[in-house]
Amino acid sequence: MIKKSILIICPFPQGVAAGQRLKYEQYFKHWQKNGYKITVFPFMAIAMWKIVYSEGNYILKILGTLRGYLRRVHNLFYISRYDVVYIHMWVTPFGTTLFERITRKLSRKLIYDIEDNAIMGVDSDVNSFVQFLKNPNKINFLIRRSDHVITSSPSLNDYCLNLNDKKKCTYISSSVDTDIFLPVNKYKNDKKIVIGWTGTFSSKKYLNLLRPVFIELSKQFKFKLLIIGNFEYDILGVDLEVIQWSKKNEVKDLQRIDIGVYPLSKDEWVLGKSGLKAIQYMAFGLPTVATDIGTTSIIIKHKENGYLVNSEEEWLHSLGELIRNPELRKRLGSKARELVVQSYSINATKMKYLSIISKD
Image (cartoon, rainbow, N blue to C red; front, side, top):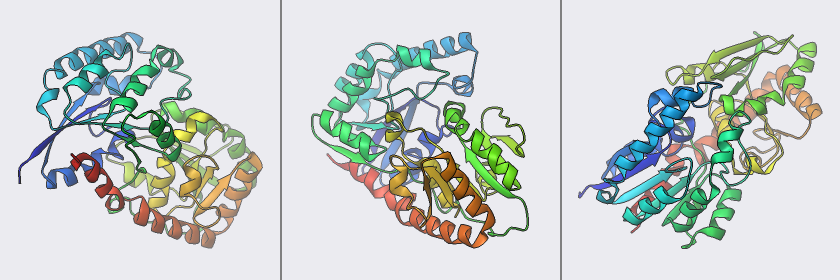
């Protein structure tokens, strides 16, 4: 077999960001088995990754960004050597479309993988100034000029189809390795029920939507709230445990959860979200309660494999039902696991990726 080469141009170092790990990175072994040699060019070094979504450290962030641009200048000299160039999210975060145009010029085949809705809205209040500096023309150029665009939601796919010159856009759902994300839940009420959420500082604003829900719920039920993230958190009157996310402990920590929660705001930005949190919880056989919007409404079927809600009252009612009823948790969780294995596992989606990178 003649080996082909594929260059990955991405924001973050390999193996650290969920948006990369649980998207294209988990297919690397499959690509290698099918004759591809993979090289990864991240914009950020690991030191920059560790501080990029935290408050403060502005000087270090500026220095890390400047190093990223120098790294990209160096990368330009190697792009033409690869059979396929695969860009995830962006080439550079700020400025003109210069780097994107040069990358397009030098690429034999260019695939653009856009995660979340990078066109509409602002994802993080903390980084609002950074968002102001971003140039949407950079993303639009990549959508328009790429040979194929991979999207994270049907809504985003429609947007890209309207822009892409070749009208080649494919929605591929987020997926997980169901041989690693394994259920262990016994669906019993012999201990305090654990309601869980996982995410980063940039998505904390969605978790904040549930603060009044958790406070009220704690007056009616005994439960533990487990938050897995990269920030400190506190809710007065709620039995709360916050643990730092780590790749090493990710599976073990998520397996502690009895009920997964996935709150989102009702705005344009979230229409581009892939529903990854829901898929993660469901892979572990957990009943998930989620805001009824966007891709989540496709993944979760209300009262079949989870709950879709639209108000604080519905959050309280759904969580209360699941806390009280272990058989309900088992029924919904089993259906959730079944769906993920069938439709949202890497075995279910790996050929979609391979087909796109292999097409001439």
